[in-house]
Image (tube, rainbow, N blue to C red; front, top):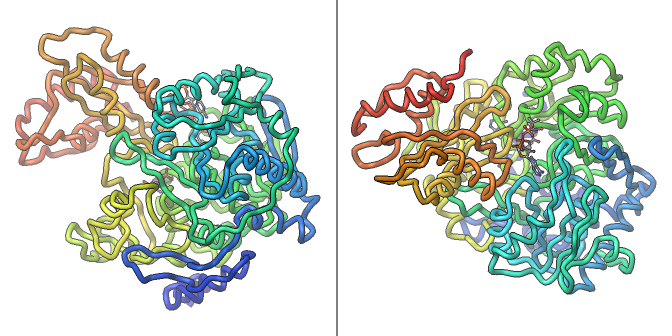
Length: 630
Ligand code: COA
Ligand code: AMP
């Protein structure tokens, strides 16, 4: 039996012993009463009764253990031509003082703090300061519109919001403050205080009585120590797309999260404390939470906050420049970033301009990794390229090639095998496990390992109904796929209306809600079509109300989605149709429309109401360039 099988079996045979051993790597103020509290199935809690502080484990502990002078965070910003290093001691000082600033403004354990910031070190400081106080942060990605921010403000009801005056998208300066003001205006809940980091590219006007600058708040702040919290207390809420416009507030606890993430750094990523691990994502996504902030810091590694893109800042050699300049031993990004690089530098010529001799592995996640991209990256970088599969809900990998345990052979198109702690099954519609190689719903047998989400914020019933109800005893991932004869997982498609655009998770249902709000639109459908760069792109279809004629409607709905969801939705294409294809019971045939758009073989379902409508859809799609050639 190989080493991976041994570890996997140990975790299956005695999960409590396995995770209790991993928990030795974390500093506890009080040890747990039970490793796994299974007294209330299907709800489980890890390290019940234990007390600790995530920020202490991620920062102070390393200073106490002699890492004070080691770089904790390197900020590399090609868009502002800045490189800045924060050692662990400097990070501790900033985090303690920002925690003090929040505390004197009334933020205490259990309060929520929304963080709406670009990729600047202050975002990390703000997150860790919340963790230090036991306050619950909720980071909102900068590419979301004011309306999305307002929805999150109303759901999380934060006491404070921490933001910045602007973000920089390549060369475009995006003022954040007007978006923040508009969101607060729209929301019913009003935060008591906003702290805004002022950036020279666009200094924000502050609202007297509510807003303060980061710089001012920090200058007068007294350091605040870490507050012990229960292992089961929430560390953060991270909103992710559900099937409606109301996003799901994924809750992460403190104890299980710290234990699991620390474990992954060595076992999955094969990183040693002191090494530089670079995750080129954004703090607004789960990858950013787990692998820009918490895991590398819990491990005593160095992390990198990169305010730039894979291309255009300034060229497709940007990633290689960063890896070589800061001696990153591994990079974690989304396949779409590699497709963008390859599009501009097909031969990978820029790679040759840099010394990457220290670079050991590339990790890809966020969307399915197409074999073409995987092979290109392997050939050009000459290091293992590891696809791994996970979700905002799980906080870390469900399936991966655990480089720190044993490197298994790579199969292109597969994120390898379920990681220790995950009992993954493929289920049919009735919830029965299917034979190897058969497609079905990918589901994790409960209890899930530590670090996965114990609930949705203020929505326990939705948690149950969305994830646990369909297959009793299992967590339904929402992904469909197969497990093959070698135990390798193949993730094929979502079972709901979630699409994946440039590694970003978006709900077509939420976009349909926006289209439906247009006064001339009677009904609509949004589908995700295949895109060679971004993986998928949304395309909308609208049917106008009887008597309505509006030549500008497609432009108008495009603008509405940008204004209400945000530029990140990348919703740029809509078409008017006379009717939408439906079943006799009125269900819109989105899957059939998607197949037509992608040029796939399709058979209209037997229940289709009027097959002739499909011809109109085909013509409409042809008119807007689908299916794409090649
Ligand atoms: N603030 C404001 N706007 C933002 C933003 C932010 N933080 N992030 C993205 N946007 C905007 C972009 O400027 C773009 O606007 P546009 O429509 O005016 O051009 C739009 O949102 C779409 O952004 P994006 O999907 O990033 O597309 P892009 O064309 O700018 O870049 C890639 C394409 C592939 C280079 C880019 O998506 C990328 O680097 N992806 C990496 C994936 C990743 O980090 N995934 C996270 C999970 S691991
Ligand atoms: P998010 O919650 O934004 O991380 O998105 C999670 C979803 O992205 C998953 O449910 C999958 O649909 C998709 N996904 C993430 N990683 C992979 C991967 N390695 N292979 C296939 N799909 C993936």
